[in-house]
Image (cartoon, rainbow, N blue to C red):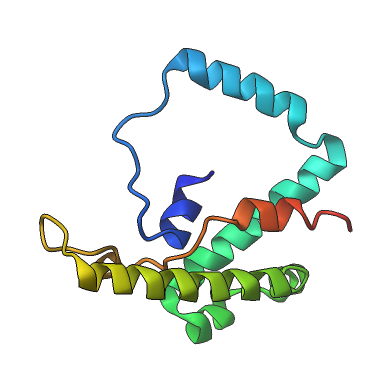
Length: 137
């Protein structure tokens, strides 16, 4: 998935120092090109995915109340299609955060830091499936 989304939705995610080797990148690119939607369906998926990603980013950085003032009405209307899925992701994030907190209390990390101290939400990275599963409009 997207590194930015992954860092916003998964507290345990640590991006790699380098990318995949070129041969692997080329292989993945060809597989993706054969499996992704095409034409207007790809356009819908891409727009929806980026709006959802940007909404998560703005909420993470500004908080929900302040972010609501910065998101245009057309983006809010688009996001309504994903409201129930986002609520489900929020519940999963709360459960994962509680589990992570419980596990951290039981053991401490080598350097004394925790994922929660990084300021990121803890949830499964399901954004891609949330958007790709709802592209039927």
